[in-house]
Amino acid sequence: MSIEEKENKKDIYILGIETSCDDTCASVVKNGSVILSSVVSSQDEIHRKYGGIVPEVASRKHIEVIDIMIKEAINKSGIDTSYINAVSVTNRPGLIGSLLVGVGAAKAICYARNIPLIAVNHLKAHIYSNVLAHPNIRGGFIGLVVSGGHSSLYIVDDNYNMELVGQTVDDAVGEAFDKIARYLGLGYPGGPIIDRLSKSGNSGCIDFPRPMINSGDFNFSFSGLKTSLIYRTKKDKKLMHKENIPDLVASFQEAAVDVLVEKTIRACRKYGMDKILVSGGVAANSRLREEFGKRCSSSNISVYIPPLSMCMDNAAMVACLGYYEYLKGNFSSLDVDVYSRTDF
Ligand code: KG4
Ligand code: ZN
Image (tube, rainbow, N blue to C red):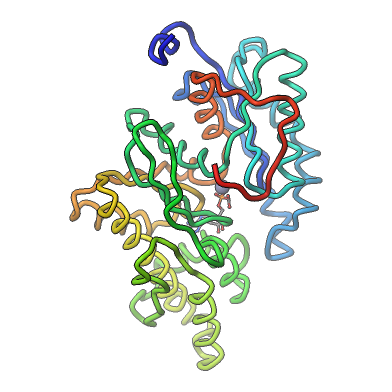
């Protein structure tokens, strides 16, 4: 039976579960495109006092709320559990203790209800947040995933096969935002705070380096940019004064955005693509969204970025990817493992 025939046969309901980092997420998605429910229990409040995620605390918190979130997602979806055709869950990459909680819950449901388990890659799921938001997107594009743990560029072919063509050689871009915010005492997570403060700053005030912009490959580096800001503020202490913070962080943000947009567009040209899909938590950044929009329209490239709610970790993107794997019959065994790092 072709994918199209299967699609027409009957409605498919996928329960998605996402616990790869510090958010406990569950969602029910119908036919890979209709979000019936999507709930997130954020741990930001808890990790804020440490200035970053504490893995052991994250996994313990997931255990406390996972059942509640799954029940809430099913209740809000308006369907009975017996309608769920399969459970799709993130099993890689991520924090091992956190991944184990979501995968354990998914396995228990699949075993008890005798339905298929679909273990998926978190980064691939981020790319599918765009498929969920723009259901008419076809394969054949460059995918940029920018989050707290990753800054990765993929070529995605017509059949959605993905090849990694570039990634960060040190810090992920979201990690650099978070570390700079912590250094400046601005709070956690740093990305949204820097984004907000930058709106009242002059992004041309400090000329930060654009690391690896002309490296000739598609890798990124954000650790040097972070060090450059720290070095500049140690040399000139008044940059840290409250009234100068917006200029400082706006200039930092501008350098990061410039490298991401420039290298992604170059990858698009090199691989003969005309579409870019941007996803991950940092895709919520207002300057990144604006700059991709501007530079892609002048380069005749279409750019797709999900709505803000789908940029951050969520289980709807996991359920959406799970739907396409379901149609292909790509199921996982009940002894599937979890992995902190992995390619597809
Ligand atoms: O995808 P995500 O929710 O979790 C991971 O898989 O890492 O991304 C979280 C990251 C954090 O580093 C956060 O600071 C960053 O996304 N982030 C932003 C913005 N909103 C979230 N970075 C820049 N600008 C934003 N508006
Ligand atoms: Zn993520």
